[in-house]
Length: 112
Image (cartoon, rainbow, N blue to C red; front, top):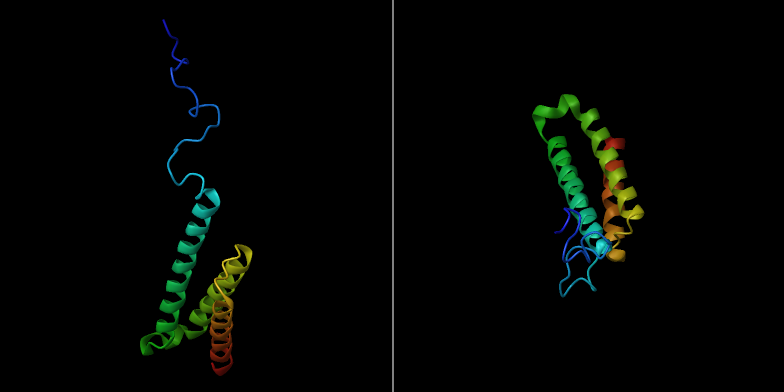
């Protein structure tokens, strides 16, 4: 009679053999998964950035413009650090467009 801790197929379940074994297990790993999650988070930050920029252009929100500018600058700083930290640079063009966006925000700060 088997005890509750004995299993017929214990390999892979408790001894670190990993869970899923499929055709992609050798080509896709935790690093790819983490990169995907990092890119998804970056997309959320980009959406937040776009929303803040729209809010800056909204006449009804002019009273809180300094707050919106601060949030936008903070969001862009986080995005820049995140891209650098997780090495999410797709190409040189992506870096240039990020620098242009950051310069645009700096110009908006100076104009307000």
